[in-house]
Amino acid sequence: MNSPDPQLHHSPLGTYQARKKVHPKRIDGPFRRFKWLVMFVTLAIYYGTPWIRWDRGPYAPDQAVLIDLAHRRFYMFSIEIWPHEFYFVAGLLIMAGIGLFLITSMVGRAWCGYTCPQTVWTDLFQHVDRFVDGDRNKRMRLDAAPWTASKIARRLFKWTIYLVIAFWTGGAWIMYFADAPTLVREFWTLEAPFVAYATVFILTMTTFIFGGFMREQVCIYMCPWPRIQTAMMDEKSLTVTYKDWRGEPRGSVKKAEKNPGEFGDCIDCNQCVAVCPTGWDIRKGPDISCITCALCIDACDKVMDDVGRPRGLIDYLTLEDSEGETRGQDHRPTWKKILRPRSVLYFLVWSGIGLGLLFALGTRDHLEIVGAADRNPPYMLMSDGSIRNNYTVKLRNMESRPRQARISIEGLDGALMWSDTMNNADAARSIDLDLPPDATQTVRVYVMAPRGTQPTGFSLGAVSLDEQAESDAVELRFVTPEGN
Image (tube, rainbow, N blue to C red; front, side, top):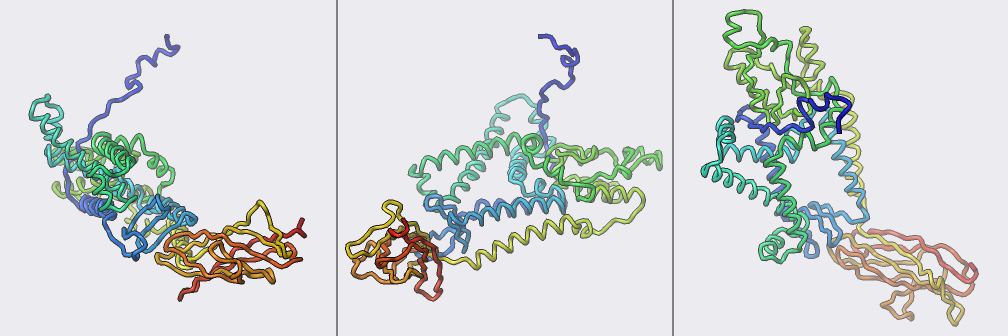
């Protein structure tokens, strides 16, 4: 079918552009060393956390961080979250989101440049590239070389390292959902659940593909966060910036020596592009391809030192400050760039949510009672004229130890109760129950009131019989024939 617009058939780019492989050059400097530190810390936390032990007593797991789906618990050191307390997890997720807003407001795309998992694993795989194939020029020559036995061997060796890293990445993830030593033993003896093997396989392949081959394409094309961050940033946001007013027009050192005053400080060495993990030329200006890892600053400062020119041609600063410097204004202190109203507001909201969660954790009781009346029949009329209602009561003991609790009738004059493990001859206003550790005890409770009792509400109160003396109550309804 012919297109009405003949230009569509002659587009120079077409609908697809082949990827231009990025070969970042090795560089040293303060930002590169900071990336080393962040990579070491984040990987150590990810791989090591499941192996940390935390003594919670004999009735609870001793893994410090555990998402126990089987028993519907979330453990984080001394904190235990039950299913009905999911608002704590929601609060942490909200804090994480606001934290990203706060970081973006203060230091731009620092999350993307240093702590994003895609960035961390891509950085790790790039170090594997250097270890196996050498630095940038060697890797470029090897890529362009024909497929020989030596090249195939190098590729297989490198991809094997990729797979080992990816496998341990997937393996570490499943350890957060079960006891790590036990799961490792079951995994290698083929006794682990199928879902464990499936999860490891999926995460191994995604890490292998995303970190080993797609790399900057994930950041540029797949991830939505750069687009969101772009909308959140303004001229007051810190970002990596090329000072074109100082660097342009570009010219080599020899040209600058022959023509004093005609060229800027940029000698067009392209070192800023060579070290960039996404291959972006920062001299073109801000772009979502720039993850603000600041390696170009390290490279440019090194070149400026070598040619005897001032550092800071590429720098971490705001667009507002960059424009101010073109007019000869002084460089503002970094703290003034960070502490601005938006950042302070984000921090206050973020810390407020955090303090609220800590307060809720510190004041919550570890004993709860809930109950519901039988619907059919709503009541039973006894031979002596007394009236009985039946209730299903659940007592939740959120301590990692057995406890005793007493439940009592509050209100409903003259009423007595007993449980399904008692004789009705032992009926009383209160009964004592043994509660298992870290569990919910379901009890069948029978409440009997004298003849002529009117329909009314009453409470079942629960109190723990220990030094904590925690208490809770549930409101119930007593139904009688008079109510009909």
